[in-house]
Structure formats: structure tokens, C-alpha cells
Length: 302
Image (cartoon, rainbow, N blue to C red):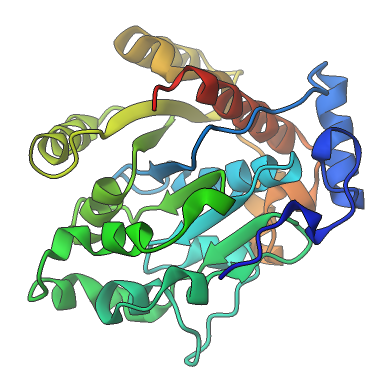
């Protein structure tokens, strides 16, 4: 079983790990006037980060929200369900031919606790990595019993009482991998970029969510929409943000994620922006977004 005790590292004030990176992140939050306690959910929140449109910031959002939550004392597991494995790369996971990955969980019934690896430099954060083997999982899953519920079965067999969040990074498609994520989770988070084609294809995603709700997971809900790649210099970005807010109301986080060179650079160093440059505008924005998500836990019924 994973050792997810909060005693894995020295704790600073408010239960935040007392490391240089955590202190830098805490200082960045203090600048914004939000140096406070982040509430833990009553039970583990399982959230899929999904949008079949590529390049909207799914992986970036998953990795940085997870890192921000972990830096503030939350215990977080990232499940990389994208065959590209970018979340695994950003969290410095080993991904060679010998790596046991989420593929082995879906196809070979490997236990998630045996797959999850601790993320370097970030206490309280673990990752179940993806490897290239996952690219063939869609085909292999077709012939398996209850193919759309393989991930849910793995979660049901896993004691999540020692975790606060499980974030699932979905592939940019609406295939069996994404369906597995939606069946296994309680909530869906949708990143939407503030660009012209922002809402293109979103209707199909919403219909798929409704189908999963109707036939496979009645408790599924779209709990969070996050606006990404916001460029305040353009009127278009503001128009897109306004349109999304008019459609989805309070589901949309107040925080906007700006375009940021630091956010783009971080994965090439095998890091999230939270560890690469904790004081950058992108890191502070993701900290704010994670803070909103953590505080929304209080209003989500169980």
C-alpha cells in the first residue's frame, strides 16, 4: 500500500511541507493575500480533466493543479491516461520498456498502488504513469468484459481514504480511455482555451458526459471549467471568456490562466511550473485555481 502519510516530510505552518519549493509557492500566494488554510475534502475527490480538443491545456492543468494542491498539504494522485504520457514526463516519471504503467492496470488488472510512484521534490504527490503501451489499449479493451469500467474497478479495489484527490489526465479523444475515466470519476474538469475555436466540439463532449450519466455513472457531474491561455491584450480572449461564463455560470472558475512562457518551458525540464518557477504569473494563476477548487470541496455534496 502506498505510504501517503503526511509525515513524509517536515511540515511548515498550516501543514504545508517545509521545503524551498513549497515556501516559494506559499510566498507567491501570500503576495496575492491568500496565505490561508486549504480545506481537505470529506472524502477523496476523483476528477477527470477532459476535452477532446487537443492543445487546450489538459495535461498542463492536471500537473499544475495537482502540484499546487500537494504543496498545500493535500494528498494527490495523478493518473496519466494519455498515451502520449506528457503528464508523466512533466512529473519526472520513469517511462522505459520496463516501466509498469496504467496500461497494466487496465489490461492486466495490476493494482494502482503498485504502479504509483512518488513525484520528486513534491511531497504528498504521486503519479501512475503512462507508457507507449497505452496506445494499443483502446483496441485491447474492446474484447474485455465491462471494458468501460476497468479503471473504476481498479479504483474500487484501492483504499482512497489516504488520498484527498485523484486527477485523471484524459487523452484528446472521446474513446474508451476517456469513457473509462468518466465512469471512474465523480467530477469532470474541462479546460477551455480563450481562442476562436474554444467551444468547437464542446457540445459533443457534453453529450458524452450525459450518456455516461444516463447509462454508466449517474453521479457524474461537470464541476469545474477552467479558462486557459488567456491573453488580456486581446478583445477576443475577453469575448470568449464572457461567452463561456454566460453559458456555464458558476461552474467556471474565477481564475484565468494566462499565456506564459514559463508554463510552456517547465515540461522540458521534467517539472511542473510550480517547481520550475513558483513565482511566475502562470504558477500563481494555477495556485489561485487550485485554491478555488480546494474551497469548492466544501460545497460539493457527498
